[in-house]
Amino acid sequence: MKENVTEMPRLFCTFRLEGHLFGVDMLDVKEVTTETRCTRIAHAPDEVLGLVNIRGHIYLTLDLRQLLGLSPAVVTDQTRLVLFKPVVGHPFGVLVDEISEVHAVTPDQIEVFSATEHSQVSSLLRRVDLIAAIGKLPEELLVVLNPRRFLTIVEQNFTVSA
Image (cartoon, rainbow, N blue to C red; front, side, top):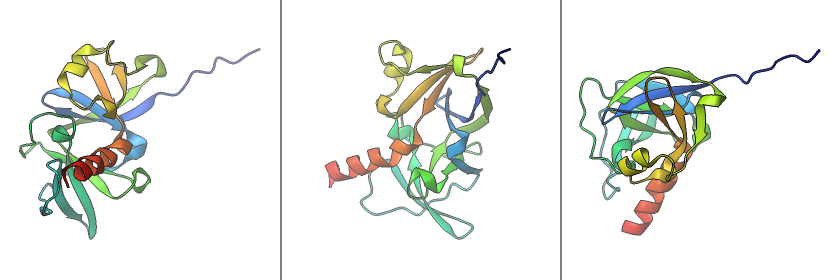
């Protein structure tokens, strides 16, 4: 007798940017914090907001909105900093408009991102190369981002502008 084995859902830390739902794999997230005050870095690309000190650890802080080609971030009471685990690369975090919830998404709800099939997402974002997948939730689409690409894009932009 063969057992019916279903794949486990993936957990995503989700957040809002300009009202749209985005997320990253929970396995990449270290923590979410309210600390948003950054020390600017001279001559850094626009996507780099600066450095933030969280309990003695220094993190590079990126403006995820600008990284994706949206308008620059405006810090409000709802703004949060999502910090990533070291496995993602150098210690860094991204500023998001507001944190949402942890979504459990089953494999049948996740599609590989295609700019032609997901034109509403493609028209919203300049940097579709940061999109890993689309999660089809009952109430809306979840744009799953690949944080392992964030620093690469910033480094490319810095090299081009330097």
